[in-house]
Image 1 (cartoon, rainbow, N blue to C red):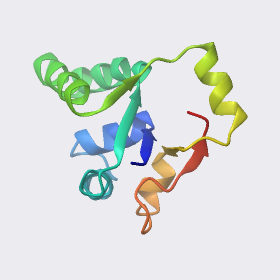
Image 2 (image 1 turned 90 degrees about the horizontal axis):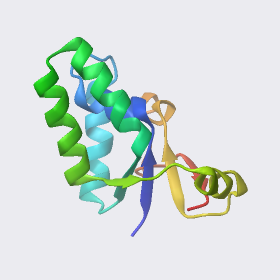
Image 3 (image 1 turned 180 degrees about the vertical axis):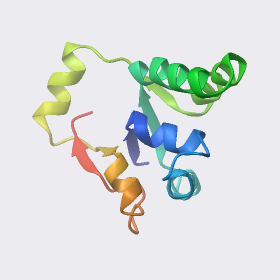
Length: 117
């Protein structure tokens, strides 16, 4: 099974329907789920999702969004070792950024840059 590390903006594009890339992010993440791609999110993204969603909506909705992410995606710790592995390259995890969303994701779900992991 492939895995994809989702950038915070991709997750926000997916969750916030008023964001310009919402529909594209929905299609990309839905395609990943259908392709059995393990979606991963850095733990640091959870605070960003909570902050953005609570500022643009309600705190309750922000909490539900974070809980849904925690239930459906693998939450990855971010520490110095993780950063070193990502910088060394050669791994099997794809990094999915907002550039992938803007490009429509191509034919390969999570076709972003590969990192160590």
